[in-house]
Length: 574
Image 1 (cartoon, rainbow, N blue to C red):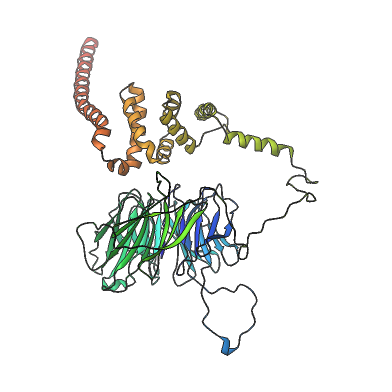
Image 2 (image 1 turned 90 degrees about the vertical axis):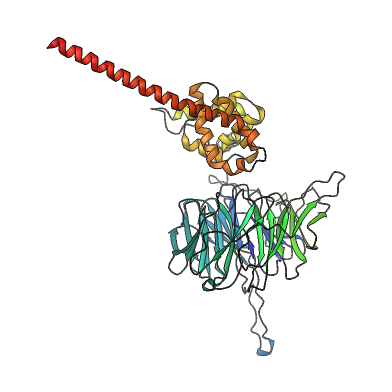
């Protein structure tokens, strides 16, 4: 099974179809769903959601293979009856708008839309292996159980204090794993917590069961991976409840993005793992889950891919799927707009394997017209294009001005964006009229990155002057990791300036430590990079104690002087 957990905004979902691995479903930067045929290496289907730009796809999950009637068929005789082949059909897509889209690859159209369940973006979706049920986790901290037969929510419950970033259903369909920063195991019959597991400092993005054994035999294991974490943890569900710590850890070169696993059915059967990391490398693991292991386990084989140029450049791997043959794996690599798919044989006995491929940089989507449901209209000189608007098919006058305003906002210069910041600041004042232009948090993040790269003091001053705590937090959370260290250096320099400026910078520094501590700790030269900031904070802490003592002395002196003056005045009037 391929696991595609919750994702961040930068993570584009990509997953193979179950069993035969015939199809590869992914969402690219343009918000469109594309289904590729791995056998013919052609684009099988393309689906454009109605809100693909505003409500982007956050996660994808293939449903269990099922028998589908593609059209009217004649009744077969008893001598002709054979086993009906099950096909991969339904795809569940969680969107940033809080809806779940169910797409049918057999029909080539939208099967249904599951809405009115979440008030925040959907981070993860998971199918029930036996029943027609679907589970989704969202930023609103809730889990929704959907009934695919009615298309409505069957159950809904609060799962965590933070956003639910990953869910997974056990092979027998009785237990559900959910995670934000704490992993919880739920009994699906009662919707009550069965176990809790803690050990990750960041949001858990990957959950999958590693065994198909019953939980009452102390032989149920599952894996978990988190954002900015280079370890995969293996947990055991014990009957006595003594399962607080992870048993085994697998080391990676970066955080996991795509995991494919062949589960174990007995202690004598090893678990096989194929993990694609954020840096585009593929790691293979093979381990017998029969007890704890103190040291983290290294991959048995690591696969990298590069082009055939004189100065080779790495080609990122997007996903990998294991097959029944231990040496054969299905790879997807390149980019999400036009991925390359290939079934290769890899000698896993070698620790490091480098594959070289000649990848074409030009984008040309070849469509398999025999199976595609996408139809392109034929336009000639006799055609008349009709646009929505007033009767007579004339566009309204206001539509053009609105469209030009939208285009103007999309192509704002830095100077215009700074003016927008001033407008948003002025709108917060008392008596400001409603509807005043305001700048969104993602624009603040873009401006901050531009200011750090160009070292423009005007841009940085305008961004740092905001006093809204929530705006500061969301701006820092949206920053790419490459801009975190320059931001810390800039804040360190400004902390040494005017006291009023230092107060504002402390607010930004607090948000950086809240969202990016795990990244800063992982830096190899942490002491040299943050040494100035550490010494400055330490000196201010020491000065704080001295100021506290001085404040006490001044207060006591003022209090004594006040009492003496009061005593003299009282005696005078007496």
